[in-house]
Image (cartoon, rainbow, N blue to C red; front, side, top):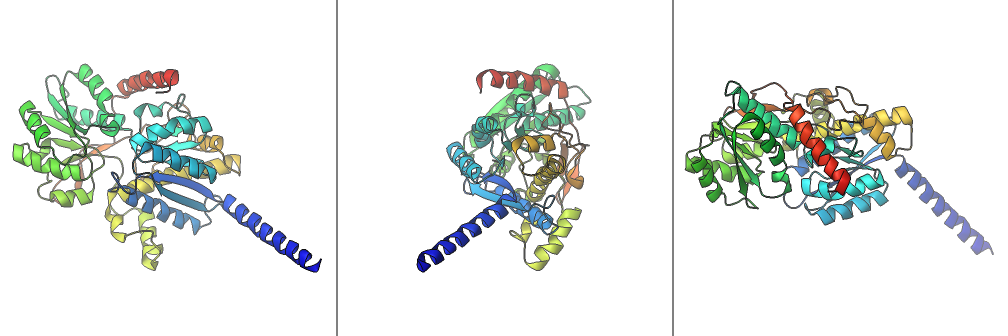
Length: 416
């Protein structure tokens, strides 16, 4: 009887420890980063995960978000939609309600399930452009410029270089031939019809290592400008083919996914004149980065290689998670603990002129606009550094919104 009693006490103590551990885990704010950590997007995902974890560490040292510690959970989906769905379901079972896929194909696959579950999907700088329509995509937040907005801003910049008249101007668009690369095409076609420029599309077969044929086609088209949606090593291949075909680097405007590593691989001098649609401010002068350097990397507590702090993708991660952490703070402050999708949604929609302390252009999120009116600017590589060529702009809002409404209405009707 004594042994049974002692056994029962021990079992109760273990159960109590389990309850206490669960309660502590339940006190944390969990963010699920289902990322491609092994295949196509490894040129960017480590820096963004590192930035999210570093910023979380800084905030946790100050008590977290309204007294709740931040937990960053990163898991690999290999840019495979099915694995992305599996990651989503696994982390959902672990109590995660805020997710980020950082992949257009995976974001598109997971989106309907997130909406059905009334969880939250961050879709900054990736995913479908019509998700800015908050009245249809109630749980999806493409904070900052979408690919639609970014390419519209590229066209607006080009227009300024032609004295406000694009009629007859030849613009080529080279893109990897899958959903990420195809995303800007509806807006390009809409603006070509409006402005009268001659648009030619140049799909680049995956994985993009051989671009000889496509750049020969571009040379024959003889565009005034080339907008490129290439990624990572594709930029290096493109630069070599441009040189071989005698196409000046000054004609090229690339998507935001080009960083300091790409410049080094192309060659600083060879890349001179290249332009980029830029979403966030680069460099390490920002106050948060300086604090991270001092408190984490100065004490050996950083969450990755310190060299990544020189990478604009690190700043991109800080900007993204500054938005999420601020929205979470607003949600807890307004509606209390525990969190749920509805509270986070309200927190996101309460953001007004939020610029992540100068890391990005200000965003204002509403129930109707889940993008926040995200702006971009055109930067040019001058051989040693990036130099802004424009202000932060958000152009062709009416035309972009028209396409948004058309496609979001189609999604509302068909789920596709």
